[in-house]
Length: 254
Image (tube, rainbow, N blue to C red; front, side, top):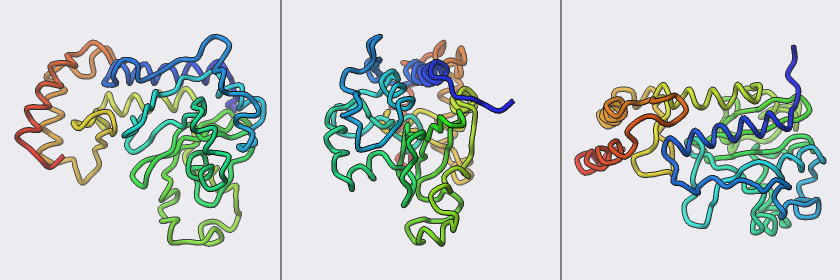
């Protein structure tokens, strides 16, 4: 059976992932939740430059966000931060077309249609997370290299002659399955809380698998009871933080 969009299920899946991250390593208060009536700052007029349909606007009114009070942004994956649709500064900035592209459009030379919205976007080493409400799916890709090509070096026609629909060819998941997959990456220590703090996630790739610092961090987490109860809790987070600080004093290559 093909997936279909559910307002309630999408909120539940995103909230579950944010709760997981809070249990795992985020500071209390990083995730903020809307009142029952939704974020009062999100109205049709405040997000009008994005040209989103009522389904998307209704969702953005009721999802949790990260409290980003300036400085380095907290991420939900390596180099990937949530888009702060509730924030009045964001709403002012998107009045400018260039700022709008930078803040809310994750794919090079593409404006997402009214039924699709960027939930999170990132740097060259990060990801984008797009919700397509028409199909009820999450589309996940890398901003700089969505199909193994560095888009900064290519024209739109060279990237994909089919034009603005090309973003749909990135990896696609049912919403609940997608956020469970992200949790699983942490459980398997493919992703780990970065020793430098919540402004990044340590992603283990082939280059890092045999890295001394990476293996030391994995050992610290295992000794602390990782992955605990599998929902981010049930392990010695404080003890692991202390051991990690000790490791950082000895190793400087993370």
